[in-house]
Amino acid sequence: MGSVLVCYSGGIDSAFVLAVAHETLGAHAVGMTAVSPSLAPFEKDEAIAIAAQIGARHELVESHEIDDASYQANDTDRCFHCKSELYRLSEMKQKEWQLAFTVNGTNVGDLGDYRPGLEAAKRAGVRSPLVELGFTKSDVRACAASMGLSIWDKPAAACLSSRIPYGTQVTRERLTQIGSLEGELHRIGLRQVRVRWHALAKETAIANVKDGAIARIEVARDELLAAFDLRDAIVEAGKKAGFAYVTLDLQGYRTGSHNEVLGNKRSLPIL
Image 1: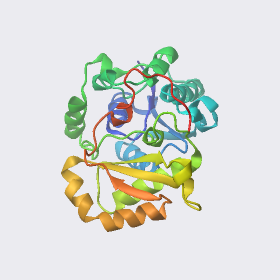
Image 2: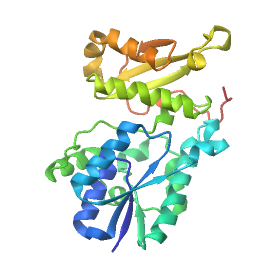
Image 3: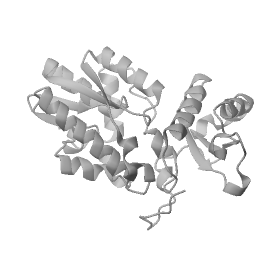
Image 4: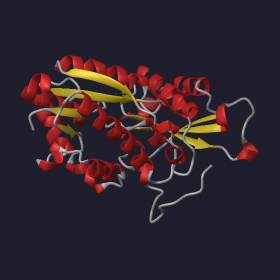
């Protein structure tokens, strides 16, 4: 490729692509992280730290998908609008930084779930080296470990907007609420965490509580007992973040749970 812009979120897949690109191309590989309310502050900090560990040039660029009414509506194509903004920015920066290609960290395992963002990548001409080479998540982790990347076993991550059910509006306040609680849950020792935001019915909403929301917390199944032992601290953190109720999902974290409600639905009412 000669030179690349790597769409780098700080997750293991894009970090591995950035590490290989830097090893291969040196200064001709640049990692770009889009910063918006849907990126948790602790994820941004870790992305900066990992890029420094790799030694690659790393640029933070503000993105504005939250200002897009189609994104805010949070229909089943929300990810398409988010990625379209990302790739609009990457195309602009690719030209500004005089780089030949834009690449992402999509691996073959991502192709099996419902991910409208893949269509945005296709339309933008973004390449996916891991897909082209047939890399699974396990391949990525094994190779990242062999390269000495400290996050080779980092749990899967996703943008904060994915914590809000389809059909429920995405707002800056709700994303801040989710990010605040997830950051605190990581701080008290939980590793694989998702704070799912659910609105209370209007007739049961509580005054002076942000949106009258319920936090449905998913943790890895092997962390369920630890989470139960930490329940008092978890409830306290949830209340501090403004949730009316704090619950633990007994099924635990599972990939793609955000899409479990879809079935054949592709358009939902907005709450």
